[in-house]
Length: 128
Image (tube, rainbow, N blue to C red; front, top):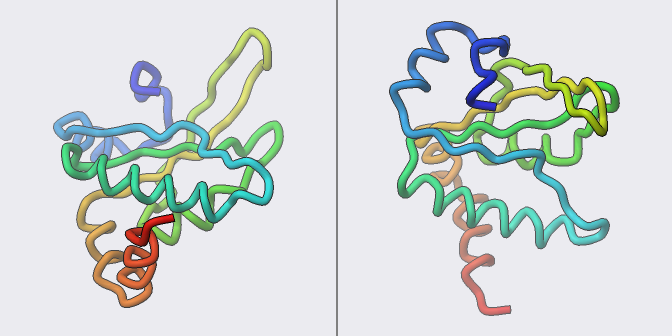
């Protein structure tokens, strides 16, 4: 994705800001059927860990040729917002378009300050 960033629809000012930042990339979040809550907890923990050493995180979800909305509620719930799209070509698959989502530490901080997030983090901290 980084190599193709200039062919994305990211706004130029945002692209400039990201190029000056330490950015992590979450590629096509997925989960095993009926294990969504486990996957969300794992993704959330990974996100918290990632922000210990990064300024922002970009995540993608496929929108063409078939839209994959499975991760979108999670992304919105933890502070990501749609910021653009990118087209890619894969020999085995063909052309795909992915939506780009961005979260920064301020967005995640705002989410973590809510009572709902505090309860969720307490639940995640309990031993399984």
